[in-house]
Each structure stands twice: as structure tokens, then as C-alpha cells.
Amino acid sequence: MLERNEQAKQRWGGAHKSIDTWLHARQDLLIEYFKLAGLPPYERESQALPALADVRNFCSMLMDYISAGHFEIYDHIIESTDKAPQSTRDIANELFPLISDTTEIALDFNDRYSERDERSDLKNFDRELSSLGEALELRMEFEDRLLAALDQHELLVVVNESQ
Image (cartoon, rainbow, N blue to C red; front, side, top):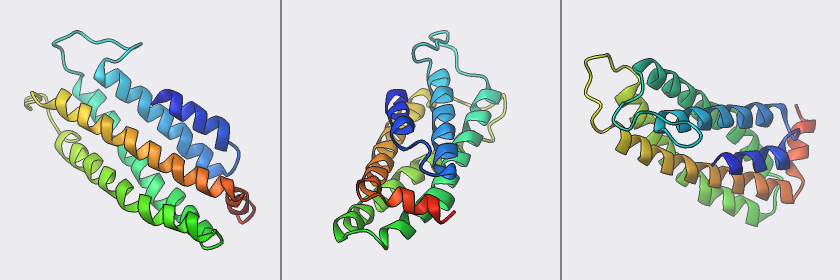
């Protein structure tokens, strides 16, 4: 996932300030995800769960990332697809519902874990974090496909010029 994000930053970085900010937030979110999950290079004790403060911080970052996508980036994409060939509009129409499905998974995770206290039961945390990770990976694939479709027709530059 981190490699995918790095490739996205290299490919679309500089196309638009909000895309740059969003890709940076995506990277920060992924790093926090790797830390919570104990994935290399971040390790945690095998049986230990992350601190609740770390979980809350991650949930906050997750909501910021999801919100930025829906209320900034996707708005630009929708505006750009008006100028795009039908094939690009078809891709957007195919992918937006799939992205929305991943949003629901992220919102459910946030609802479950953002307000937990020290007494909360976290026995399903690792399983649900793993499911969220799979959803985030799909989401990023879908987002990158949208950006690639716009980039193919040089529509990311048009978005930049209008801002």
C-alpha cells in the first residue's frame, strides 16, 4: 500500500494542491495503519493491542482522509469528468459506488473504535483492522484508477488551472 501511494505521489504530485495534500494524508494514514497493525517495519508485542490514544488518532486521520476524498478530490473529479470522454465518465460511474462501499467500512470501524475507553473490549480489533486494511487497499486502487483516467485526457491539469 505504501508503494502504491508513493507511485501515486510521483505520478500525480503537483497536479493540484488538494491532490498533493490528499496523497500526503493518505501516506500518513498508511503509516499509522502499519503501526497499529504491527506490520514491518513497525512491530508490536504479539499479544498486545495498540494504545487507545493511538487508535483514536488513527480514527481521526481515517475520517480526515475519507472526508477529503469525498468533499474535495471527488468533487474535482466529478467536475473534470464533464469534460471527459464517455469512457472516463463510465469509469467514474463504475468506481464511485465501489469507493462508497469502502467508505462504509471505514465509518463502521471509526464508529466502533474512535470513542473506546480503557475498559473497552478490543478482542476483534485485529480482525477488523485487517478488514479495514483490505478496504483501504481497494479504495486506493479505485482512486488511482480515477486519477489515471483523468490524467490520460490531461484533465488533472484543467482542474489545476481552474483553482
